[in-house]
Amino acid sequence: MEKRAFIAVGLSIAVFYLFSMLFGPDKQTVAPPAPQSASSVTNSSVVPSQPPPVFQTPVPDSSKSLPTNVVQKVITVETDLYTARISSRGASLKSLTLKKYREENSPESKNVTLGNDSDPNIYSFSTRASGFNLPDNTDFMVDANSITIENGGTRQLTFNYISGQGYTVRKIYTFSAGAYGIKLETQVFNNSAAPIVGAIQHVMTYPAEPKVKDNRFDTAGAYLFSDNSLQTNKINDVSSASKRYEKSIQWSGFADKYFLNAILAENNSIASVELKKNSAGFFESIVSSPQLTINPGQSVTTSSRLFVGPKDLDILKAQGNSLEQSLDLGWFTVIAKPLLYSLKFFYGYVGNYGVAIIIITIILKAFFFPLTHKSYKSMKGMQKIQPEMGKLREKYKDDRDSMNKAVMELYREHKVNPMGGCLPMVVQIPVFFALYKSLMFSIELRHAPFFLWVTDLADKDPYYVTPVIMGITMFVQQKMTPSQMDPMQQKMMLALPVVFTFMFLSFPSGLVLYWLVNNVLTIGQQMYINKLVKD
Image 1 (tube, rainbow, N blue to C red):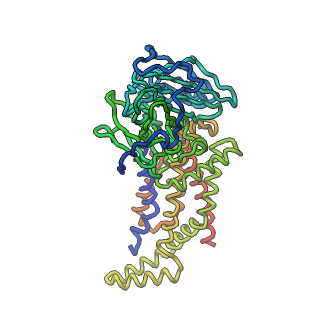
Image 2 (cartoon, rainbow, N blue to C red; image 1 turned 90 degrees about the vertical axis):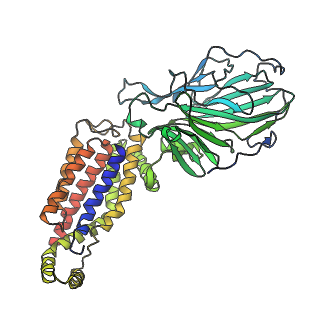
Image 3 (cartoon, one colour; image 1 turned 180 degrees about the vertical axis):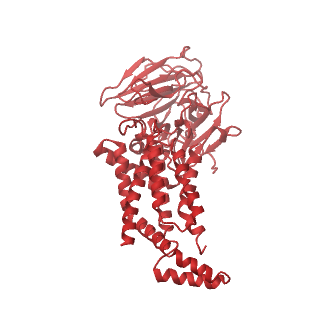
C-alpha cells in the first residue's frame, strides 16, 4: 500500500504540473580471510592458559568436561531503558522489552518487546563456532539470576562453557545504564595439547512472518552495512539460496520500520555474514569472526557491540559504525536526514511535533517562494495570452512552422516562458519525497500527539478531518491556479483533489498536516500573485 501510494503521489504531482506543457499550443564476493595466529588476530589478545580470577571454575583436563545446564536458565537484566532476558542456551538474548515505547498508543498498552520470549526457536546473538565443536544452542553456565543497573552504573554478566575437547568459551555481556548499546566479549581458552583453528559465530534469528499484523513490519527484514553501502534482504530473497557478505562489514542485524537489533564490529571483528532461511523457517543471520588459530595454553578474545532499540537518528548515530544508515530514507536521504534533524530541533523548542511540522512547512515554503512565485506568474502570463494564441492557431493552421515562429515571437513580446510554470515545481519534488520519507519512517512521530483528536502523528486521522480539509484546500488551490487547458481538461484535473483525498485517508496524519499547511500557504501566495498581475 505504501509503495503504491508513494508512486501515486509522484505521478499525481507530475500530472498536475506537466499537463499544461503536454497539452499546450507548442506542444561481491571476496575470499575468506586467511588463518591467523592468536598473536596477530585483529582485536584479539594472547593470555596464559590460566584463566583470569573472575573465572571461578578450575580448568579441566582435555578428557573430561564439567556438567552444563540441562534446564535452560534465564537471567533478567534491568536498566532504566529496558528489561532484557538472557538465556543460558547459547548465552543468547531471548527478549528485550523497551520501557519508553508501547505497542499501541495507550497508557494501558504493553511495552514493545524485541525478540520473542515465548518462542523456543528464537535465540538472538546465540554463540557457536565453525572449525571446532561448539554445538548450536549450547547450554552455558551462569551464576547470576538477575541484575539491576542503577543510574550511571555498569554491570557484567558472564557465561562459561567447558567442553570435553580441552577448550573453554566465555561470553561476557557489559550493560550500562542510559544506553541501548551492549558490549559483548567472547573468549576462547585452549587448554588442550593441539592448536584450535576456527571462527566464533554469533547467530541472530528473526521471525519470517511476524505474528502480529502491524504496519511497522512492512519493511521488516535483514539489514547490514557492507562495503560502505546498505544491504537489505527480505525472507524471500534467501528462501532458495543463502547470501554471503565478506567485505568491510560494519554491522549486521534485523529491523522493522521503527526498531533494530544489530551486532556491530569492533576493529574488524566481523569477517563475514551469511543470511539464510533455517530449517525451522526463521530468518537467520550468521555473523563470523576472522579465522582464529589458538595455540595450546593461549586464548583469544573477540569484541563486538550489540544494539537493540529504537531507530532514533541521534541514538543510532551515537553508536558509530554508520548504524544510522539503518534508517533507510530512500533516494533522497541526503535531503531527508537534515529535514529530520530540523524536525527534532524545533520540537526541542515547541514540544509538539505537529507544530514542528508546521514550522518546517513554512520555512520550506519561504525557501521556495522565488521559484513558485516565478512559476505562478508565468502560468498567469500564459493564461492572459491565450486569446492571441487562438488567433495564431487559426491564422497558421495550415503552416505549422510559421505558427511556431509566431508563437515564439508572442512569448518574447510578453516575456513568458511555457516551461516556467513547470520546471520550478519539478525542483521541489525531491524535497517533497524526502519529507514524505522523514515523516513516514520517523519513530519520533510514533504515538506523538498534535492536538484534540490527533493523538498519533504516525497514524491516520481517526475521524478523517484533516484529509477532507486538505482535499478542500487542494480544490480551492486548483481553481485559483492559471491553466492553459481547455474546459474539458480542466474538469478532468478537478478530479485530482478527490483522488488525493481518498489516498491521504490512510496516510500518517503528520504527512497530511504538512500537505494541508502547504496548500493553505500556496492559496495565500496565489491570491497575492493574482492581485499583483491584475494590478
